[in-house]
Length: 260
Image (cartoon, rainbow, N blue to C red; front, side):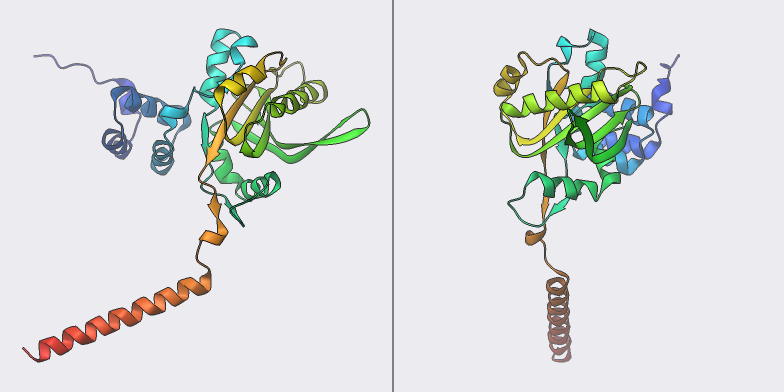
């Protein structure tokens, strides 16, 4: 009796990774996606778990974009694989429930390692509030990345509000500026990435009409609010209260036993 050959990619993934994939994935396609991602990016088990929790399989390749208008088919698909539909910013904390772009940017920049992990493999962080000078006037890009696999700059603009059509025009301007001032002959065309709190895909697609550069629009979620988190003093009070409750429970149990 002959046995079917064990697929080679499966042997390149540690057993505990397989356990996480088998127990958490809902389809064969999803499982195969995370096996390939583990091999491609050398994911640790914790990194794999984070990818699954962030629903990377569902979000990847679905970002609202105009890449097909600016790249060959294979390049367009590759860019869509790299950029996500939604970014989980659960590692970042802002002071209040109502916050602006500067506060969001600051919260992300304070956790740059987590930000790069969430952005995905191949992203290199070049700077926050990156200055460009056009016509003697200084302007600032929220976040500037270079993607090693795509071999291009990625201009990232953050909006702590839902998408508005005018955001596309501003991002288009920054992408053109980076193409003119930073891009070399060895680099592929610069890509614009707008990350906002929410969007309507029809508005996004209409806003892309007439845009001369490749760009995508994504959303983010899970920002932590500091006001909603207990302070150190509050945590200490809760611990003391719990200790008192445990001591009282223990006293009552001992008293009950002494009367038996």
